[in-house]
Length: 384
Image (cartoon, rainbow, N blue to C red; front, side, top):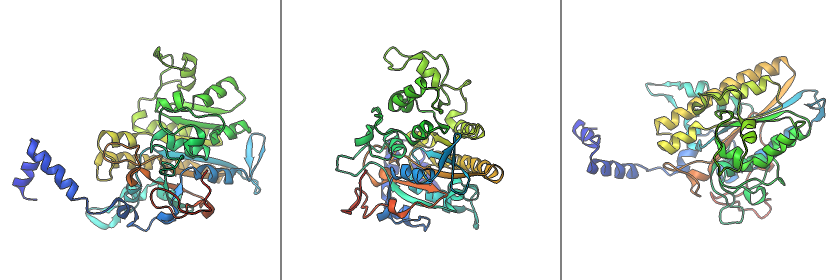
């Protein structure tokens, strides 16, 4: 670009800002779907995009083959089965594709470090990387917001929000559809969930938290990694001091905004012997809201790369355990929604299109059928 033009556009004045905004629109020559699909990395077609609630059924198919003995899930091969679920909040499908396919910008014969130390790539080697979707079936009673609470809860309960009670971030989950973490804790296994976003515990999952608080025999651990014990509770809050303290770690993490707290807490729970370990990264979504949901945005891309590297580190620890402790792990990585510009919640492809990576292939019976970006188009498809 000519230096004079460059200086004009970077001046910060009103007219240059408008010109840059126009050029950005014009530059969008590829559709979002073309960008996602141009690399041959997906284990299913777009028409087979998996509704995100099928993650719940994928986990159940792995664990329900086991017999629970002495607080452990023992497989037919006498292995102790365990589950790791890691959520990449707000990480779009094109960002996933970018992480796995980027090359060294100065030497295309070399991969980027994001490719070499990618948790997503490591997990999908033996299983697969799948296109999926959130938001329910558009224009039907199952339609829900492409938001954090609705996205995670569909994955954790195996149904859309019209059944589990959460269609947006302000809803509270019913107890008719429990999370798989609580289900297996009730069967005698140890499980855990950590996140830094208060509403997930204080509003969305408060019925499950209260049930676990009342029944110490249920080995379910909730943790809001940056919450402080005995922090002042607003008068308008529906939670008690006891409730808040139950979620708070002994010492709040100062690194929670950077998600190293999520990584460290997951590793802690693995070391404690949990059978179902779930952790959610938050910084990717935060960078999207602050800057832009786009792999072209440095802050968003760097948060995605960092979290994926944290996953790679966690996987190395699991591999050591599998080699020494007769354990067999199902690892599932996923996101809850995409994003467009600085937000999400609507029904665009940028917001609805998601992804799943797992080290055990997903049964194609769980694949979508005739998905067109809005709904399934197969009369025999069962919409949970």
